[in-house]
Image: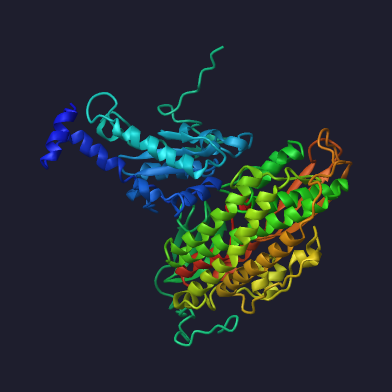
Length: 204
Length: 390
């Protein structure tokens, strides 16, 4: 239930701030998304450039890169995920505390990108963990990463605390752990997590 | 211990790692540093065996970023592989381009126009400056100077990346060189902008040096740590600033005279102890020499085409044969080995990555030092995982 805008402004003039728990809760979450300090490949350099003085990610409250997954809210998959690295990425994601979000940065993280033909390259991290924002590019520019942060903030702002569309950590049915793939005989086993990813249907 | 005549009197005797004799009691601790570790420059694992604080064994584990570069190179045409070389060492895409173009040009006997050679030198030296600046920034970050030196380095790097972007269309993945020249010509405005950036570089290096060179913490943590003996360096095939920091005078720009490097006057800085501090100083001095090369190249830049009009682009099928092209990349000797069987794609395509081969002496440098120094020694090697694992 939203507060009447005019009433809010009127009360604001009197020094009274009115808001809902939901707005306050989402405002707090979206204004301090701490990413994990976790670089994979080329895109990691653009990620570092985004945090530097010129692009200044601190404007969005996200300059605090935490080396530990336990303290991080956001995982930026910045680069190619190989089949040797994929189990580690899923394990790191499992170690993060809710609420947690994922940005797939660059073509490789989305789909394998230019290295898709390679025998050792995972064809998109969304096969194993849920991804909130995809940014295309090889590598995406720092502005694109900032756009991804803004998209994520918008997404958090629109979440309701109850009912449909509530964040995963408030949903008791949502899975907390995701299956960590292992090297099978030929390939990663399982090839994808069934609850996370389904084979896209091609409509003729 | 003094490197480049710089000695810290106050810290005499401090800069040696304390040597603890193992009493044979207690357990050895095995630590896996990586693949997710904030100082591994990507995804790399070191299995370190520790006796207290002291490293007694170190095993590097590679392959977390193996992207099948060589296999992909063999399945596609020569030109289609050019953008993939950008992603080898993603700090220095232009030098990768150059080394690959050089190998193919050797294979087909292709000439390169004068202006293109000059542009290649300018771009390669700009790449060297930004690579060395960021390497030193990262090294300082690993030392605990969290962020600030890196911000100075990246401020300069952004200026150079702007030049790359306005010339090639991309900040990092430039894909600019072609077999027989360069893709597009540089406009007079670009040359002017480059002059301006190059004119500002010495002030940046001065500033960097003023803050860092005699810094007590930097000297205490770098001098005498991670020593690489010159004989071991030569036997292991080390190249680049690491080899020169050990005192071996070997610079492919001087040895091979590839491109037009024999026209420029520049010196090759050498270290004399082969420790982290020397590696840092060699990089610092190389930046100054690069600036001097840049000034000379910008002064003499001739007019003319940037692409050989006789260069074949469509239906590019080199005759059967083999070639090896190498350049002095910012990290060391970067070589491309190609075998052609007359088809549009190479029969064999092999990269000699400097990062990977420089990493092979990591254990020798780390043995006996403290575990906190492993991070610094590793950082001073200056690797990029895209090139190590390929």
